[in-house]
Amino acid sequence: MKKLLPLLAAAGFALSFAAHAADAPAAGASATAKAPTAQQTRMKTCNADAGAKNLKGDERKAFMKECLSGNKASTQQDKMKSCNADAGAKNLKGDARKAFMKECLSGAAS
Image 1: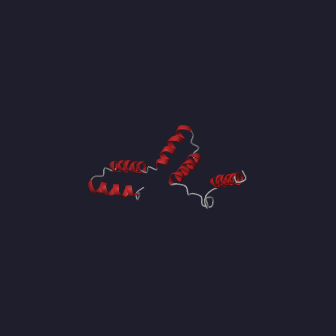
Image 2: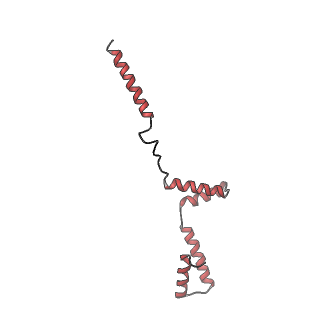
């Protein structure tokens, strides 16, 4: 019995120490916070933009979907449509149309 008490006390102390060590953060973990991922940064920016535009409900949902997708293709597609319409309005053909489209799509033309 005399030998059992010190063993139980040591086991209790070891279990207490192990439980406390598991709850404590790893060394240096609190000092170095993880940097936000690209998606988290995009989410924060899109959220701020939606708030600034005072969007609610379905409008906000649609805005967030487009913003978070990071899809730049729609902007390029819109530019292509606009430049095509301008070239058509000016009745440009062949090399003149090519040159106009190149300049228009590069953003040099307004």
